[in-house]
Image (cartoon, rainbow, N blue to C red; front, side, top):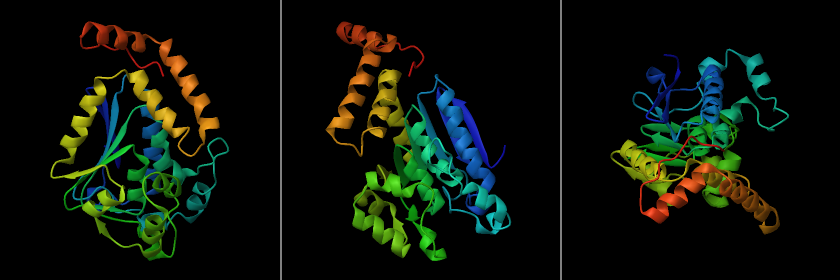
Length: 264
């Protein structure tokens, strides 16, 4: 098992940061492995969800500067954006989860700092354990967050909160994160919260779930003239698909639908 593990159980991909002795501090290899895990999940049409979590005492303490600092030339290469997506390797570690056609749920505990928080914000949902502490810690190092946070946090909270947390690097608790809209829920058992959501989503067509995610990823910043054509295109694709027909038939019969593999 490497520093990022990937295991599929019952149609759910479990992706784990696996460097517990360093509070899952991120190495450059881990960033590449996270993007590769997202790509792997994107191609698996049997999946219904992805759960991101960390082994040990923390979700992720951020970039391991001691490790990454020894690879300055690689850091510079990682900063070069890819032409197709405009994202570089650092940004892909967080944002590539938005391209996975199933819900991605981050389960947080312990420390969730810097790059770790940016990876978490790249997920669709975040459930935090009571006692989790979070920070946009880049301010401590005289930097700004550059692993896709500028896009993800804009969908979740207000601009003054985003500026404050980025300027100060202050540490805040899970309840405050919930109040600011940065996490989806806080409890003593966030894995149970994730499982509950997954079970709800399993009752729906995998194509409709994928289309729902695509709908908002492609319209959130747009006005009606750009958003409406996306709605129209996705709906036509769904209406022509097998899983939509299965959902309609089961709904009319009052039965539980038995969906086929995701077509989206």
